[in-house]
Image (tube, rainbow, N blue to C red; front, side, top):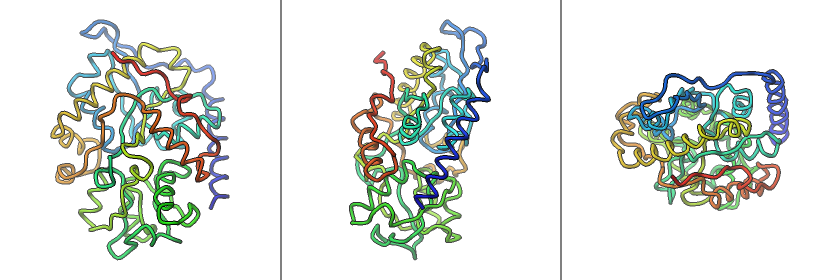
Length: 334
């Protein structure tokens, strides 16, 4: 399996190089429109995202005018932030920001891709009971982490955060990272993979976590973010260094707007639950019952993020030791 992953990593690196070559000399920039009501020109940011609950502050912040206050308009492009597409998408300017995991950013850094974290996105719970990413299995399937030896697990991408978290959890019961196999599965297809027995367990984030538990009565094998560290900052918004250098005011405005939008989402959970069905396939009934992500943190949390890097290196998922402070830019306080 490790050999397969190395091959996939080589393909991804070659693909990135090809896209970079094709993008050389591109003049594409985010579009600028009429002056904003608060003064200045409105910048439209294309942002690569996945249809998961973590992104509710973007949709909610856009709806209530938070991003407009900072002269920003968001063009949210779904299904464009899976690990292999983040680097090419940012470096070719297909989108200016991408919501991605710390692990994706670390692998990009190791491959010398000039991409950095600019703003936080979401964090896990303090304990497994409050986490928003769990490992689920069918009711007649594995009932504990120890039962996973030799099993196949559904994950959204290889050599990424999901494997770091699963390996961290397996380590607590004496199983090594090579004791399981992985099959790449989109979030919305996790339930089908379990029902069709293509996977024995699945790494599932909200809102799909609550849906699968509700519809299948699935066994919950534990919170995955908390397996690494409490309140783990598993996702960030990243940008190409060239864009950060060329547009520092836009980046600063996004950082401030993102922080305000996350606070608004934290303070208005009913509005969050109402907006989630508008950008995911989740029903209002499931949205009303799901665990909401943790948006209560002020910055990129380098101490907690470093634990992701250290565990990733320990389990040979991140191929080199990484200092996460080299992967982020300063976060404004006002």
